[in-house]
Length: 375
Ligand code: 5AD
Ligand code: SF4
Image 1 (cartoon, rainbow, N blue to C red):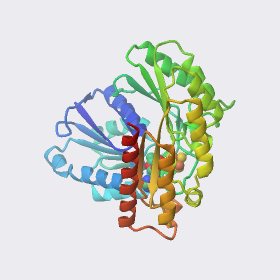
Image 2 (cartoon, protein in one colour):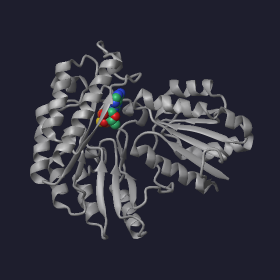
Image 3 (cartoon, helix red, strand yellow):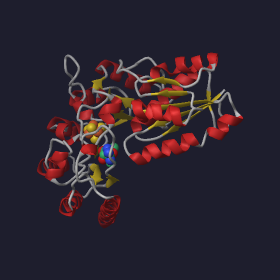
Image 4 (cartoon, rainbow, N blue to C red):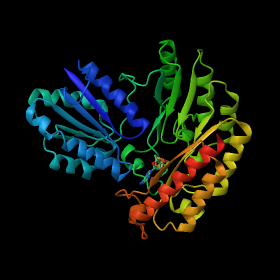
């Protein structure tokens, strides 16, 4: 019995797919080579932009014929997209040949659902999940070579006005520090991993929800104190929570990679406020200055959104000038995509696609130019 997993979206999803693989291998499935020769196919979806969702619909739709030819094929759609009740229902109605549609929170129960479908050939299980405890016991099938992803927290409390993540991943929930340290100790002891990448939507707010609280700086120091020859990196940082203490730890700890992904999203204060980012351009530049002073060789990257509702040409030029000023090692630039249920989706002044397209191209061209200049 073979399984095949198609993953969309961010590193968090890649890591979730490693857990899904663990569940499937526990049930006796083996990793298949192609999506055609498989007994179960899982789409782990992403909802961050409309384009990501369109790709999922296209991929799932294309399976209709395969399912006709192989009635025993089990099709699962899970992840951020199907955590949204409306999208999950739409998926069920439009693609009735999909067997299991579940959200982000019920992946731990995937094994039970598959067993149920196999036993009864009961079609179209739809389960949206309540936020639950982080499941520590399920195994991972790690797929990133010498790098091991380690989740340190789930969810996000920030509610940036454009972002769907807090709605589909729930509130911030940190793992116990001891459990994280044990996982890393075992990974290093296995001899298979030389790099640990800590994952969270906003790693800098790690531990604020634990009692007693544990700071991200302490977690980093405690990880570095573990025996072994390995490096540590992390993503993603939010500028509002990146403390001087964390910058010092990165500077002083040899094991920590000198790399920070610090999404700015915009270089204009009015737009930053509308985005609910809780920092100004000046505050952001201040943090960048500190990083460059304390960690001179630090690689810095960022995310930007262009064409946020009401963004003027002048405000967009502020983003261009921020990119010029910081001289990032690289950036990701996205056209704003309205996400249903978010605050920004309801804002007046939505920007035309052609304008967004023009801005994203100009921003990417500028960033490419600056990278060449440095070399
Ligand atoms: N439209 C465009 N880009 C978005 N991002 C998040 N939400 C949206 C959206 N609605 C971008 C942000 C974030 C990255 C992962 O995706 O830049 O940092
Ligand atoms: Fe989305 Fe903002 Fe949370 Fe990042 S910090 S996941 S952009 S709400």
